Length: 290
Ligand code: MN
Ligand code: MN
Image (tube, rainbow, N blue to C red):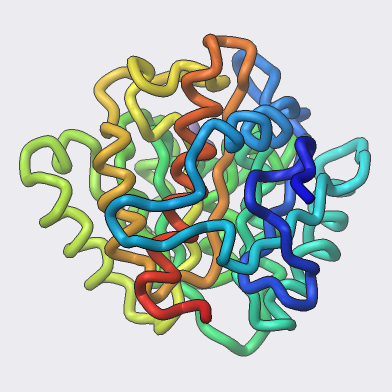
């Protein structure tokens, strides 16, 4: 019954599923070292490492209705990827399911947010070492360096919080003076503790539902070095676990981007797979699936 090529325990049909996994093997906007296109399948592979049973919640993932759609089909330019991802993700929200999207570089996140039903407000918790707030980068407004900016344009600056940031250009800081996207830096998380930082982030987001975009580089390279633009002084895996637990009752969708598996021995893929499973388990525990 198990499909070794799919995400572990994703045994349900699309129709029956509450959670739908989709891969986006796209990394054409990567600015430093490439390879995130190999992320989705590597995360799937490593997901088979784990027991279905979750010790903390008593939830058995083999009993949770999860479907794996596979990967979004081949694409060329970023704008083509954006169209494909929107088309793939839209039916997931329309059927009242929670998408869990595996990237790919961070350019793959804005279309996941943009495919949320229009007219419904959505908050976005953006976990990233970088601010990704450039209006355009190397001539491409759909670059991964512009993703939070595109998301702000879709949902409004008041509905986005960047958490864990520690790398930003002066241009991004200056642009944000008039736009006002909120951020909580990695240094503030270290100073105030993750619990209080998450509480602050979630109190800033007033929408009923929240989309969580996880750029894996928000986590310190000591734990997650398998990524395209690693940045020291990051969050711990346990910090991100805490975030997922706190946001679960309001979760609309979740993505994990920028896993670039060839830069380590599988640690980062393993962590990403575990965090995807954590998000699902926490949603079920919060009563978001039956
Ligand atoms: Mn990013
Ligand atoms: Mn980043």
